[in-house]
Image (cartoon, rainbow, N blue to C red; front, side):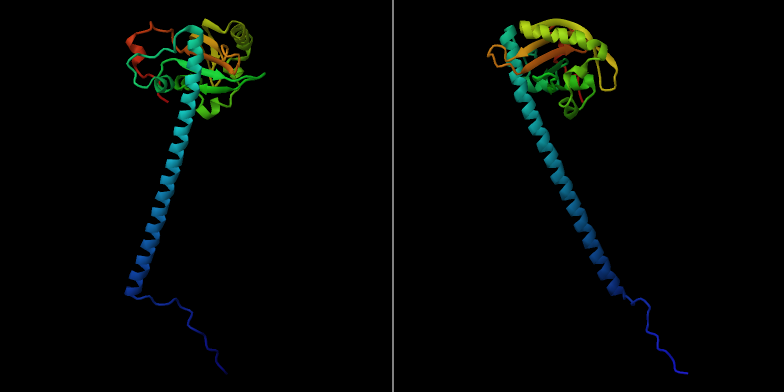
Length: 217
């Protein structure tokens, strides 16, 4: 009977020297992968920081215009302690009262909210800037809110408003000592309305508590 020659199908034998070479190659590939991943993370972090810096710059530029309109109507700027080095950054990030603004149109959307406002309504900046401002009040309170806005359209500003608002989870909360004013009234080029309110009854201006950064989000 003729035999059939079967080839050697076993795995190749690797010497200790070969193992060392393979281990070195594996370690090199692993290091390259980790280095590339760290580089990508660094690039992504820088990109996010750049986007955040641009967003803050845009917010501060808009806040300056909101403050200028308030000054034109009242003769004074939005409250800020006199010893604050960067007035607008304090108003944006550390003010213990909320500042908001919406644009024009039949169903205006928020275009600005400082940190205190985001904290009160429990929205992120991105979420807030997509929110129709009417949704800041509950269904039963929207008619009263619209009356307030109509008064602002007629008179330019309204003060001393206290009433309910609703956060993202649908929970009601009270805003105190609210003021709402027209944006662009003096120039005749109306571009929206702004508001401020306190999450607690407003302490006397000049109270030391107003100089303390109490809102962190």
